[in-house]
Image: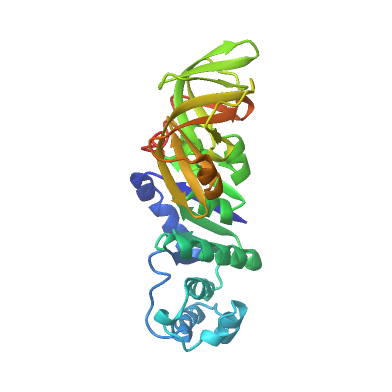
Length: 309
C-alpha cells in the first residue's frame, strides 16, 4: 500500500523532518535529488549498499536484485548511458539492498522534465505494484499522488486536511485547498438558497448554481474537465453559464487549458481549432449545477488558485 503526504508549505517540510529521520532507519529511501546521480557502474553502486547491509545482517545477491528489476543487462553501464526509467529502477534496487520494511520516496520525480516524468511515473507505478511493499511518498504533485497511491493525505500548516483515495479527494474535497491541489477551479462567492438549488454570486459578478447546500461566503469548486466551451450559450437550465474573453490558451500534453473569465476549461486541440478560439476572442464556459461543489470560504487554496494558467 502506498500512502502519500502532500507537503505544500515550506515549514511543513521542516516539521516532517523527524518523520523522515525515523523512517530512514527502517526504510529504503528514494530521493528525487539523489536517485538520478551516482558514480561508477550500476553493479558497483548497488553492491556498495549490499555490503553495508550485510554488515547489519541484511542484503541479497546483487545479480538477483538487478534481474528482479530487469536491469541485469545494464550491470556495467554508467549513469549517462541510462534512460530515466532505467535510473528509476537502479534507485529502487539500491533502496531494496537493505531489505527494508518500507519504502520512503521523497519527491522521486521532482527533477524530471514533463515528458520523462510521465514515462518514469508509469515505470515506478509498475515497480511498486510488483514489490507489494508498504511505501510512503512525499510529493507536491497531485498527478504523482493520484498515479502512484491508493491513499493520499494532504497536509497544510502542519495539519492533515484530508486523508482519502485520489477519487474521493476529487469527488468530495474537504476544503478549498484540497480542491485546488487536485486541479479544480476555486471561485469565491456569496451563497443563498434559491428554490431547490443554491445560488452563488461570484466575486467577479456572475451567478452560478449548485446542488450542494450553502449559505453566506463559500468557495465554488469546478473541475476543468467538467467545463464545456462554446461560442454561444447552451440552452439548458441545468447548466451554469459564464461568458467572457479568452484570457489564455495553454498547451499541456495533448490537451489545451482555456481560461474564460474566472474559469479554466480543458479541451482537446481539435476542439480549440474547431471553435476558433484565440486569446482575446469571446467564448462561453458552461458547467452543470450538479457538478458544482461548495466548500467553506475560510479554507484558502494555494497561492494563485483562482488565477488559472
